[in-house]
Amino acid sequence: AGNYGHQKLNEVERSTIEFNLDSSEELDYSGFHTRLIYHLEGISYNRDPYALWGDSTTPSMRLLAKQMVNSLINASTPQIAIRACNYPISTKNRTGGKKEKGALKTARMLWDAMEETKMTFSEIADLAMKIHNKISHRFGCDYGMDLMRIDSHITLEILYHFSSQHIPCLGIHDSFIVPQYAKNDLLRTMQREYQKITGFLPI
Image 1 (cartoon, rainbow, N blue to C red):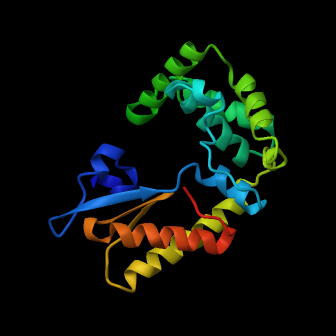
Image 2 (tube, rainbow, N blue to C red):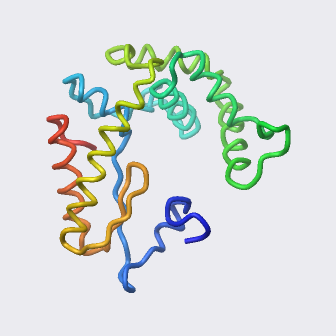
């Protein structure tokens, strides 16, 4: 698992995880925090929260939208969210040196996406506020900390469920990895614990 454990593995590397030679399965909450806001507001929401351009959304557009929407959720103002999105595009780190490895790869991916879409993060922020107008009052107000407390509670309940059955379960942000035989149990548990908090089923 490298120097930082399973948390730092990419998706392909995580797919190779085994438990006592048994293959693993990973499930995640789709659009976790954005969907969570809708559900906490009592609004049913089943769409892709990052498809700001509807059916015309390309993978590059979605990548930029995901970066922007999550920044709006976690920043104290929209302006700070925009600045937070602009930094990852730079190939320079905060000390002026060149970024390396994952950070450099991310910068190049975001730069290519910006070149394809011909949009700035300021324009994407305006679009996100328009598309998500029903929850836009939660953008740019540090709401992410409240959501983190909620998703931490959900995570702990899921991990406790499996530890009480002596089944290994690894948590990675909004996803969980279990032995393949426990996949259906993981699905039910993720749904149950999310629904307890929100009253809605997750995607």
